[in-house]
Length: 141
Image (cartoon, one colour):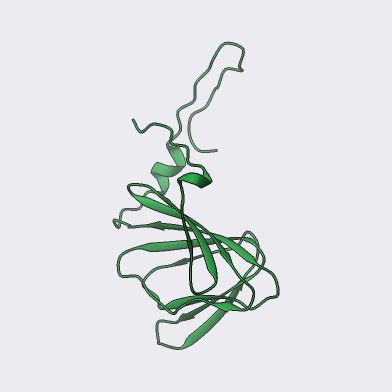
């Protein structure tokens, strides 16, 4: 059984990149979570990933995702607060073309090709403790 792990800002690896993005890296054995702040009028480098999957969730502001489609054509798509994008092996970049700081969280992991949706949906065991209401069901929320 994996223990509960708490991490605070002092546990993160902080990097201020030349691309005017500051990142707090929270590193775990099988995945990473990055908390990002990208300054106004900033473009990150075009890049791709061979094995990892990145999922970005915008938490403040607006972020422009630029990417090459499967046929090599350039595409643009804006993401607002609470919107996300999952990028795999696509060539992509992110840009803040606004006058405000944009904040987003990146979840990075290495997939193994196994569909885990049912496991994730149903992996919850309920407990009852004195003074709490007795649980009657088990499964996803």
